[in-house]
Length: 293
Figure 1 (cartoon, rainbow, N blue to C red):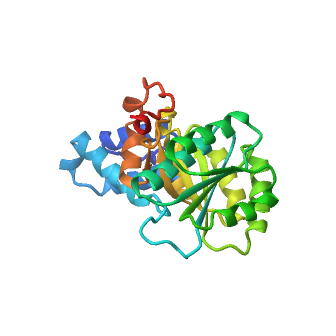
Figure 2: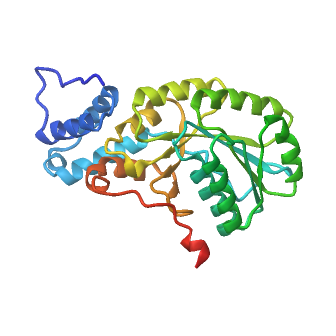
Figure 3: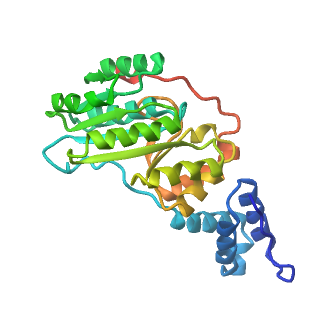
């Protein structure tokens, strides 16, 4: 990441310099840092003397720059046909776990009729995981080995409110599979796609994924593994500079708890406090205790 220091002749308040350094260490892009610097430069001296107030003002400005939205609307269904939700992303990003969290929320908390379909047949563990969770939640699941089977499977679930579809993991294969799916489902209404991106990968990699997906009309993101990321500034970069919306954040593997609708200020606070909050946190294994107890 290219860093831009303040102009040689411009003397910044020490707390503004401190904030710039904090953002730089978090790998926030220079254009965003400069906008925060300009914002803080307009604040009164009394505020700038108080580091807590500087952080609050900076975080508030960052939050106003984030693009969030696009989460699942459980109050109004788009049509009489089930709403179909595709989950895409690279291997290991947490697609299956995230899909199950959302399925559990829709079924157990919102009392919606939900079905699952998985096209991720390359990993036996993924198939077994989704089968186990579907039994625990009490919802049906279909395992498909061919994309061509998808339309019939959806037809069999036409009495449901939501059909959640897990896709294969390799990102390049995922793009090809998504094109196939969109072709097969071109006549079916109410399709949403969420692309999952790990908070642990580099910003340049995030943007490559977003660029490819934008050509397919995908602009809703779920950021995963925020609890495992020591440097999370790239998430801010992605939201501010990519034009995509962040819809959900996941911060652990507990089902269905460790997922939340993306709130701009909460995202910024989590990221800017990451060194304190996450540095010594060990990710917990998946939990189903809430369903069993």
